[in-house]
Length: 184
Image (cartoon, rainbow, N blue to C red; front, side):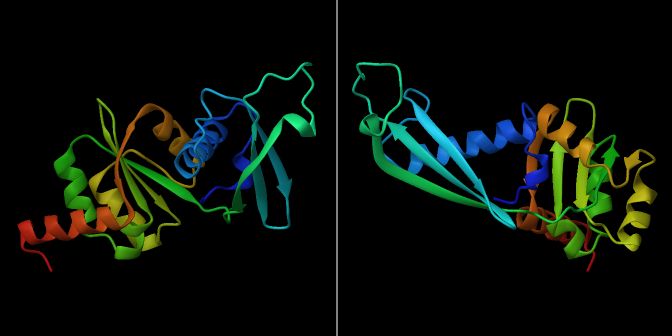
């Protein structure tokens, strides 16, 4: 699920997003809507991952409020969350979309594949995991506003901006823009 386990702190946006993704998976893979019923989520850490067990509580009303084995339905879904190695995230801000487009067509495909494009009302932002020195120098030519090795800036963007495109889709966009500018 591409999550750094250390970022799953109580009441953090990363945890909320992670739990939402788990609930959506439960809803998709089972006949149960986790938003309207009761579930139990158990997390068992291993060396490099967490194994989650999501259990549906029986819809029948128990005689007591205590959860027992009798009122737990056996249908379970498991998700293994491998720890993502900590990566350096750098964020580059652009005043307009055209400047962002001019910048990404000069980046390596490796940088673009690890990038995400966010849009807010006031700016455009590009996050890149572990950018090379060359890619950083290229991006510095197109913007004066950037944050190197700042994962918190990415979390801010995830919470307050709209993720427009990332990864392979961003590579396709950069390739299309290059064709428009006739750049090889």
